[in-house]
Structures are given as structure tokens and as C-alpha cells.
Image 1 (cartoon, rainbow, N blue to C red):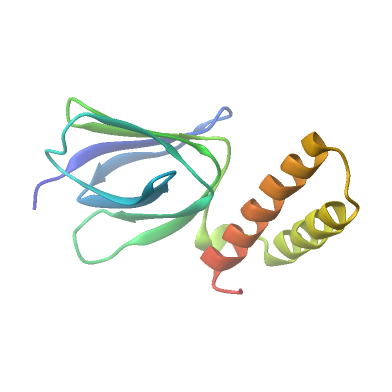
Image 2 (cartoon, helix red, strand yellow):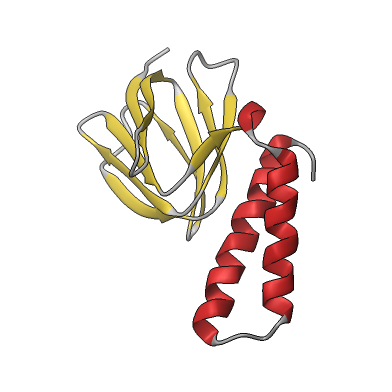
Length: 134
């Protein structure tokens, strides 16, 4: 199977660097699958599962926050504010984050505070979904 170079990076570190057969990630326009030879592409990604297949049969899933996916010259780069493999997610912490965000949303704060709480809730729900506990 044809592979491509995949880099997943955050402001703090290179989370993943290796060869992949495919990835699936959710953009603002919906899910996109990327295979070797994909045309050049750039899109915003939203908090969602990111599925990485290194060999075409097995895959790993990570929870990604908002960011960007870019395909250029056979290299796929995902830049995101936060990312965790499903097995590394602290479910208790994600539940606490969800509960805190829901309380903040119910408090009817300013528009800015509401948007921040809404983003935190999306991230917490995504982490719980990816972990398989939601």
C-alpha cells in the first residue's frame, strides 16, 4: 500500500511523525479521508476523532482539538492545539471538564465566555467519545 509522511504537531511538541496509509479527520465542512497522492489541500479541523492507519488494516484514534490539516508535496501535517491517543485519555478529567463547561454555559456569561465554555465542552465530549466512555 502507498504511504505518506504524517506529522501531527501541537504548540508544545511533535505528537506523531511517521508513515501512514490513511487518515480521517473532521473539518469545518465535514469528514475527510486522506490517502497517498492526495491533491494539495488546507482546511480547518474541529474537535473530533482523528483516525490514523499505518498499515491499511489497523488504526489508532486520537482526540484532536481545533486546528489545521495541510496536504502538500506528499506530506500531511496536522497542527492542533491539543491531541491525545484514545488510550491515554484521562476519562475522569474529561468528565470534570464537561461538567465545568456545562455549568459555565448555564451561567449565561458574556458572549466571549460562552464561546470559550462551548469550545471546552466540545473538546471534553470529543475526548469522552474517543475514549469510548461516552
